[in-house]
Image (cartoon, rainbow, N blue to C red):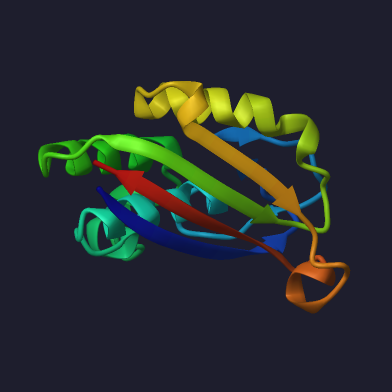
Length: 155
């Protein structure tokens, strides 16, 4: 059994759609990034890659590569799972936390879990997602960005 940790952060900007956990969430701002900037999926990818000692998301899917410009992060997650499985591992579980002052994510968590489970071809019970605020502190509290943390157990 091996564990990995992932972290990601993206800036909130006007004029972009907000994707978190593979789903679009209605909001006035979206996350800025080379891909769709799904902060939760990116943290999960890094946790999975770290657990398998396969470096990080930037190594496998660099933001300098045109092929990843605007890509749906669910594609990156599916490719990450292939890398992990090709290395001889299977998912035990994911535990993740998204830090956002707004929008409220709790109503969307079940849909996120289902989306990620389908993308990773695992049971929904293997995916835990929590949401929190930073009590109006820091860049998250000022609604300048959203961050996510994830740990992954592989076996």
